[in-house]
Length: 183
Image (cartoon, rainbow, N blue to C red; front, side):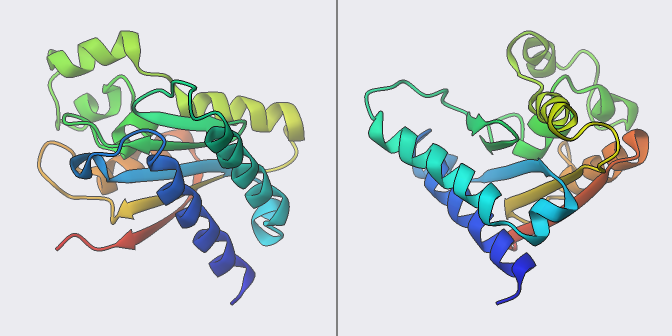
């Protein structure tokens, strides 16, 4: 198996393991895992994957610890579950719903996003700042996303389009992978 395949297989594994620390309910099984990495880290993924696996072992050892019901993460990666109103991609790339409003997908009066403005973390901004702190401005960051299901084109969500719009507006390099098609 080549390095990139191994990297995504490890991300997939961490995503599946990580979601069990957040919810045991079958209805909440859809997730995304995302990280901000350098090209070198992606090509020699051992240290990055070890960090993620170490974090999951810490989670396992602290079973009495209360985890946020919708995300776990450390340093420059996060596992997010879909919520009833917001897919993981929207929670990551557009936590306040600004892009979805600009794209005409959601109304700026959408109550679920008004609420999110006060409760949702800006995971991607945090990870990008940590990347910049570690690597400075001379190393190009790659946003690496693995989605449990292929990013959707479902009305009211349009995750695939949202990812593209985020990449265009922020001039970001995003690598997208998924585990399964929606059937």
